[in-house]
Length: 148
Length: 266
Image (spheres, one colour):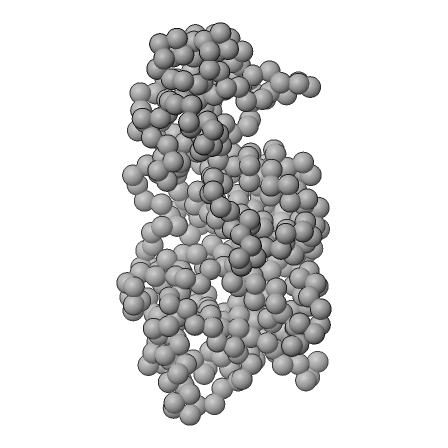
């Protein structure tokens, strides 16, 4: 288990967190390389089905991140997203899906340091939790797909 | 319900409506939907405690809509569904007349949908005691037990989509589950697809479900899928103070508050 490296997917918004992650890079701040970033126009576009698909394809953890409240490029996309996250998290919890593996955060375009922190702490937490075997067993994907 | 029969006959004779949707005696002691198009059909209308199917599900069907103006025998959950459908621009006064049945079994005539809305607001959506206990039983389990419970239950699902057909809120011409570019949900009735389908159903019904139990009653395998939507109704109460179908008012999932809970967001 000690050599386990979690596979992480980050769904981020174009205007804040993606730019923030860019800043992390240009500031030469080093952070865990486990995360694969997927860019969206807005957190309001991040459908819960995408999160399920990430687990389905073998992700051990997910980060969903966007603009702070009141900073949305489209005024209210993140507020709507937050409502959906509240309900989706409750449903996941009720169904026994491990919600510790889904991390929600607000990271602005100026918060390069915070992005590195969010990724590092989340990767650390998932490393402790180990691979998401329960979901993988259900998804029934062959090992090569997960590791590929 | 002689009153109901009389009223339906009148409406059909005067051509006020083209069809009356209600319940009639079915086979094996069950009731089924009746589409009365001639005045003499109206005498088959019944109402009793077996009439639990949510008839509002027919209101969005093209073949029913095309008949013309509809009158519908509507129990409380059906009236709630109608108001939610009106809010989503699926029905209007121009194409619908509601023959309400009060919770104590009396016929009540409504002039328009605004009156129906006023009526249903006297009866807020509440999870009944028995279902509350079912929910509590699951909530008390550990996450691993809950996962086992749901994966066991949902692995029984045969993906017949009876739950979708019975639900008045599932009226999309193209459901995400039918979408194959991309293929969001695996087609076979195996656990991965079943799980995603039922999660999707519950999320898409959040803030819209009127807690009528039609999905559960329709399920040939008695999978307690109604508990998922009930849980969403309950969570809506916890986080957003609950909801009621309303034509012009605010809907919880299409609005927000700047101070919505965010203690789970870093």
